[in-house]
Amino acid sequence: MGILSRMSTIFKSKVNRALDKAENPGETLDYSYERQLEQVQNFKRGIVEVTTAKKRLELQSSQLRADVQRMDNQARQALAADREDLARTVLVRKQAAQQQLDGLDQQITALNDQQQKLSDAEARLSAKVESFRTQKEVIKAQYSAAKAQVKIGEAVTGISEEMTDVGSAIDRAQNKTSQMQARAGAIDELVNTGVLADVTAVGGGNDVDRQLAQITAQSGVDDELAKMKAELGAPGQRPQIGPPGSH
Amino acid sequence: MIVRIQGEGQWELTGSQLDELDKIDNQMLEEIDHQDGTRFQQLLGQMLGYVRTKGRRLPTDEIVESNLILPPSDATADEVKALFTDEGLISSV
Image 1 (spheres, rainbow over the protein chains, first blue to last red):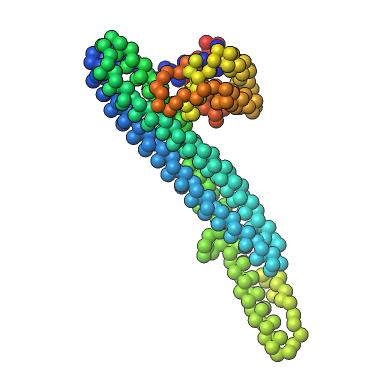
Image 2: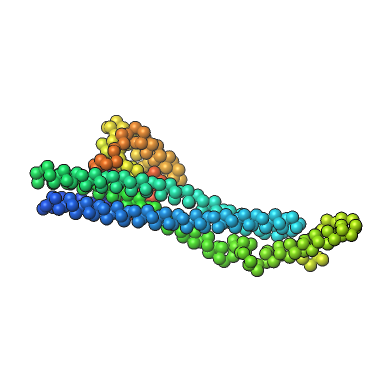
């Protein structure tokens, strides 16, 4: 028994064919159609959930991207101030953030593909439901009760197969999405506990920020001094900044 | 014969085309227990590609039951195996 036949058996066991004992074919068809419309609405909601989850990941990705950029600037700033040690610390954190970002972007791309496929699947399903609506009127009008039973069985099974397919595609997408959200939550956690965020916290009073602020202030003073010296005709001097405490 | 690629829709294949699928199917079965699932996914890609290019795609509004169900394009060997195990079908091989 190959993969395909086993997969088909499993899939078909989920397809609903429970309508073949109906007493009134017309009512059965109408009922089935109503259920199909409800299902299509459910699927649409499922697709919206996937889209919402994707948007959240996109937001997180753009925040992380800004953090990476900020850390890059901070590293340059530190290096320009001859603080290679500080630049190194910032770059280590930047690398970690960049790695998270790459993973996140990959997931977003995958989710984009999936979202497109789900919308296509939903469109196919809606077309079939519409086709079912037409067919059921034909069956009601033209077929004898016995023959109608057969036709109804075919139509209901066919459309139920489509429902099963779209339903499991949405389930898969939702599973993947929740895995991604768990991962995104873990990244938030890293940021919140400071593994990634130390250098990125706006106005945060952490060590790196303080040291950079010191350097900025220091070089501001040095710049001003150098300017003043130049105005006074003294020979120009490049400011040298050492680690804190060396002055 | 009507085949469905999960998540993509339905195609009609001739008997000799089904033989081709059967060949790939057997290779996939050999690969399903391998640690590295790369070959499995290659074969799956090959199989789905064959159906998409050689088969006749059914019109969207046609309502018909499929004879064979193919895994979705992003299915992994582990996923398929888990599905079989869940259903207790693995013991029937």
